[in-house]
Length: 612
Image 1 (cartoon, rainbow, N blue to C red):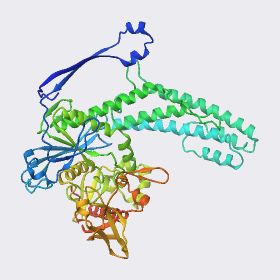
Image 2: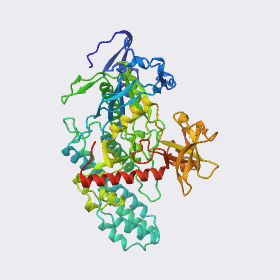
Image 3: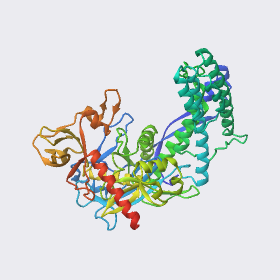
């Protein structure tokens, strides 16, 4: 597919039969009559896929699978290994939810190019990484037009109505076990439902019977429950038939979702709904669960698993092809338009839990969705072309501008459709904005927005948020985290003093120093001052995780401060928003940043002077 030639030698070979068909064969006699597909596997060991020299890089210990990833530049890299890599290209990848990845390519240069974003490599005055290009990678189904989005919205609405209807059905059966005043309260809550699949008038007759004896009340409610149950079963059956495959082999939903995360999420929610319906109680005291190891909706689960595997492999392929400089045309054909890269950098999500970086829903999706599987698939495919893979800490790549180091916030451009959404109007009010004064086209702060905004000379600097994160990965890797912006501290003995906990990446910066309050009236605004023996190394157990009293594990989360009685400080390494020598307690720092970004956006909205 890449029009490249490789040298290799034959390895092993094998014959594979269809596992599903084999599982259905009961004995040796039926096995002899096997007439399913037969696959022949041939293995070729490549002998010329040489990777660039990695002697000048720090690496992770070799994993069980034999993988060893780059994690930075060695402190003594001046010995010449890095200089030999002049012209080397590096692709950084920020895996996302809206599209599979945001990518940024930097190339090694002996002098800083004029007018381009670049930075010096750690330990070198004559080697720079210069920005070459940034772009978004999408898989089928991730970029949908308005017609497809409208169809998706209808499908989600139908699923939401069914889910809400099943919840109402379960509330009704629990009502049969209620006694006294609880009956009237529960009944009132059911009658006040805004939308319902069921005829609520049947409940009004029950309202007059709330004084019945327990046995008679149970019979009355169960009678209504059975009628609702039949109604739900018919509605669910019609819904499933509408989405089933036709005789031609395609369902009405064919081409709607592609292999997008939204599509996989929709199918998983569908399966959960079917499980809830299968196990729904028919008595107030019932609690039903699926039997262990019991297959349920096996074809649907197999389809979901196949979609996930397909997405992982296609995502890895798209990233590796991008590293090789290939660009896809609208017809699906690819051509090698750019110089290839020798390194792919990925965000290290192994211990990533920063809630103040990404929104909580995005964090959970990133962690639950198989990003680690994509990571290993990329490493496997990249090895074919002699590309090495690196890991970079992902914390707060979405909260600092890559080019300037200025802290900022996620933002979004307001659309007419957003102004019609009740949830959006409610969010505006929670943020202190008047919905009537917000107009389409205006840029506002919004958690999870597509844009990142920082302020420079009172002007908003806007960049696509995921691309900014990808550029931050490059900067951190090649500069060895040269600009620490976060400090986890214990309270010192002197009033207003805080002792930074040393970690590998910050040991050199914080060694022999502590944070001291600038003003005792504001103890959580500090500066870094010399102090003999004030710092200590963070124990390994603290570096990896914190166990709360209720058994929950927190890994590098902002909750660490409350759980372990530590204080977390941030600073603005650029000095554009706040003095670069000042360290602010986390809540104060991000509150200040949010206020200044909002002010800058307001001024820009009045004067129309945003720039990217």
